[in-house]
Length: 197
Ligand code: HEC
Ligand code: HEC
Ligand code: HEC
Ligand code: HEC
Ligand code: HEC
Image (cartoon, rainbow, N blue to C red; front, side, top):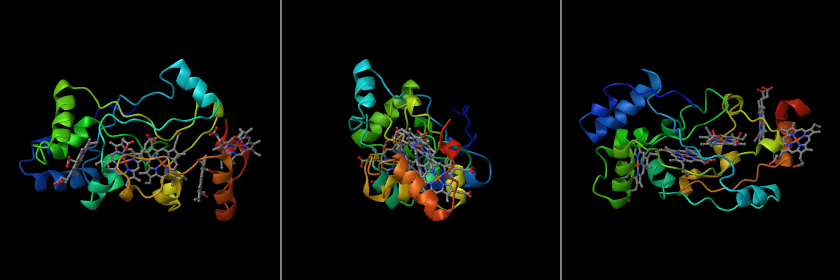
């Protein structure tokens, strides 16, 4: 998990437009403005869930708020506004509620869903998003985002088109064949230890 980082002043931006611009500027010039949630649920919350996972039966995650990817992407938000570490390291990260409030302090504050978002922020509690993608420890798979971003492999190839999704849906099956086929095509390493530990 990343330490809490927030560019002072961004949250004080007076207008919605300014807040959005400040977000973009902060991301490019003043270091990360997005914060990563500390409440990122672990793979299994219950033994039953662990058992389902063992037998490879994955339930559809029920998110606490129907976060609309398509609305944000239509409004020109880019993936890295919220998944800020995707270009830099192994994980993409899930935004903290503080990142939401950079905009929703000002934008659509009268809507019921935004009131829910604001109430998490007021309590100082992160929204308990459930994992959509991810490997279990037992799978012993090591994945890294940054080399893929550097090699210009699009998010779409591994996550589908988020511009048409509300909350993220598991539309791509990250099985071994999926990984090694592309590695073969692109001349990336298919040494077992590239992906396994
Ligand atoms: C870069 C600015 C920005 C950030 C950051 C942002 N949003 Fe939004 N959000 C918007 C805009 C713009 C809309 C569209 C508002 C409209 O319909 O006029 C919106 C709409 C929404 C809506 C739909 C509201 C409705 O009922 O119509 C939800 C829910 C929402 N955002 C949740 C979130 C959450 C949760 C986060 C943090 C993970 C977040 N937003 C971060 C700008 C942002
Ligand atoms: C080559 C395939 C691939 C590409 C390209 C890719 N992802 Fe991922 N992504 C994954 C896998 C696999 C996981 C699960 C990783 C794990 O559990 O270790 C994941 C997990 C995530 C998560 C969950 C949080 C996390 O970091 O584990 C987010 C958010 C995410 N990806 C966003 C993105 C975004 C944004 C892009 C484009 C900039 C992107 N991904 C590109 C394969 C990919
Ligand atoms: C305004 C903030 C915001 C933007 C912009 C955004 N996301 Fe997300 N993303 C979220 C939130 C909040 C979640 C957790 C809820 C969910 O799973 O949908 C999430 C979840 C995800 C997940 C599932 C993570 C997991 O649990 O495994 C993927 C994959 C993902 N986003 C990809 C993308 C891609 C690709 C883009 C750009 C096309 C993008 N996101 C743009 C806020 C954002
Ligand atoms: C759509 C194509 C594509 C898919 C799918 C894909 N990769 Fe990759 N992967 C690449 C490319 C291209 C590189 C960069 C190779 C380079 O830098 O020379 C790469 C690099 C990597 C690296 C870094 C290797 C190194 O030498 O540093 C790892 C680890 C990795 N991939 C794991 C995975 C795993 C695990 C999956 C499946 C969940 C996966 N990849 C799916 C194309 C893909
Ligand atoms: C490009 C990445 C990549 C490479 C290279 C790779 N694997 Fe995998 N492997 C995966 C992924 C992803 C899974 C599925 C993990 C999951 O979801 O349980 C997997 C699963 C497995 C499994 C579990 C059974 C299965 O098929 O799900 C075994 C065993 C395995 N790999 C062995 C190997 C061996 C041996 C090599 C070298 C010859 C190798 N892998 C190379 C990514 C890779």
